[in-house]
Image (cartoon, rainbow, N blue to C red; front, side, top):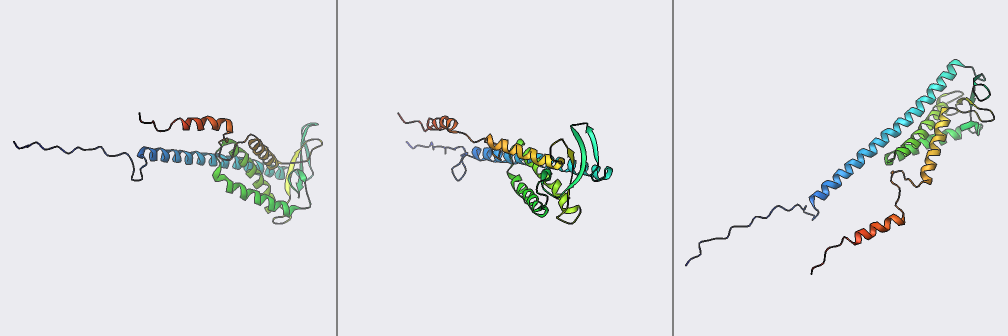
Length: 221
């Protein structure tokens, strides 16, 4: 008796693995994670630019107000015995330090600004964006004075006007620089890197390693 029944070909579902042997879902997850990280970093860069612009604009507007409403050497009490506006021109660094090295501080401020701009692409933390933004805005504020104010290009004197008793006279740019430096120092002491994620210590790494070891392939009975 002839066997007329023929075995139907068995169709196998298409493999979800890519030619390289990596599950397609894993590639999709990695792509999504990478896109999210890129978008997040761009957001922090915008935050950084916002704080830098805020510090710079506040500095330049207050200096414009001082130079247009006061004469050099004029004192205007704000809170008697505590705070006054005292318009002076400073050839040195922040808080009137190093008044005979104007050209040197011009170069330093320019180098600081360039360095911060280079670092900006790696910002992954709001607080780093705040610190570096304030630092950049303050540096650019005083650098603008040094480049374009009298007596000459790159030798300009910075406008200072905020005065407290027994303390150096300063401006909004100095406040931005100091605030940025303090923020960066605190982040460094707390171990928070520029990318925004605190490095895991040995205590947290050990459970992860144990968990990974326990997820091996099941053995055959």
